[in-house]
Image 1 (cartoon, rainbow, N blue to C red):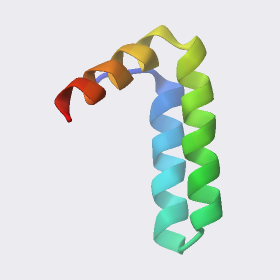
Image 2 (image 1 turned 45 degrees about the vertical axis):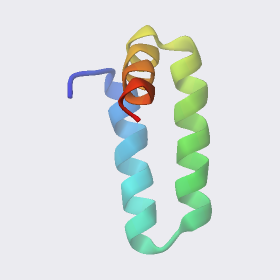
Image 3 (image 1 turned 135 degrees about the horizontal axis):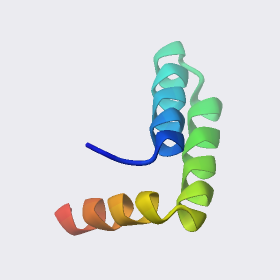
Image 4 (image 1 turned 90 degrees about the vertical axis):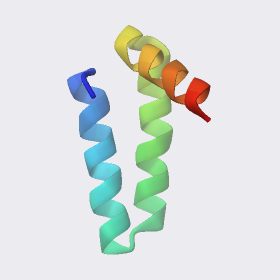
Length: 54
């Protein structure tokens, strides 16, 4: 998946937190990713594509 570097970083941080069992940290990453996507055109496009796949 191509995309915004910042979006990828938030996803990676979320995954690391989840693997450590840090559920609060994983949720924080998802919230911050959503906030970032609100201002990131690349992130918005990826999010819209994912919603269409469900």
